[in-house]
Image (cartoon, rainbow, N blue to C red):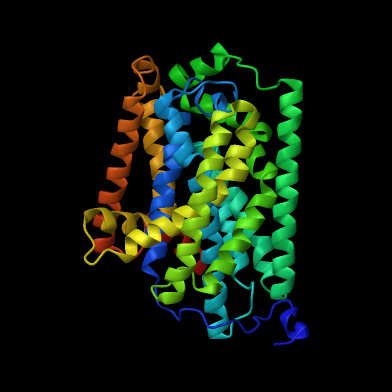
Length: 389
């Protein structure tokens, strides 16, 4: 493979042998864990005062239960999900290479369709949608995969450096200016989500779209880094069931948990001034440890039980599960549905934990039953149908 061949846009260069067309079981489990894990963070957004807008109030304090959820989940499963999107992109690239198809080719349409899905999701369901940011990042990474591996590594590490520098500067600025003061959410916003109409909530998202869409902008270089890291891990064989995969996952477990867990605990205990470093710097490291930990557990499973089957099913219907869990939380929490966020807001955190457990159970059972009759999730099927026409 020459550098010249590597950089011909529109042509798929040779790649190291990937795991053929075989599905890697661990990836489905990891996707399922990532989808349900993101809800560990988002469920507190749905149920908090002011919901989606209230999440921007960085000074809000968390109790022991929510703080524990934060240490375990905040930013970790989002990073895991982002990395797995990069893995999915690498799999599609490898598939195009085996078939001799041009690249990015039709993948551009898939990314644009994902952006459209994310836009609809943002407007109609949940302001903290991740799909739009993933779609934009995927378009860039799809092009980068036509460049040399050396170029990809260079971009990956530059992206990491820029991101960490940016987060450090923002953290210093917030600490110096005192912008993390504990200001209450405005009564108008609390009232909007507790008693406002659905059309009013949509209008509010559109009116405040710039602020509500700021996360994928601020974390663009993190998204880029994690996508490319997912590509590298896949090509290295980190998700395989062979000795190479187990060895790589052992390293991820040791470094990710050994270094990531204490850093996340320290950043969380340090208070709101370190929120950005906790969610966007320490969390991705712990996400790598989760890959190693989940991989070690999966390696020890001889006969999949209901939990393993449920996680695998959610992973195979990840897009549908991601949207459905948000729809369910909206209907349970907001005034347009049951309005439990206001009714149970003063009863403590355990009902929020119960909501998370219940939604997880519904997704695992529902996706398992769905896949007994259909080969893909509902939204995945719509996407495939749309891209064929």
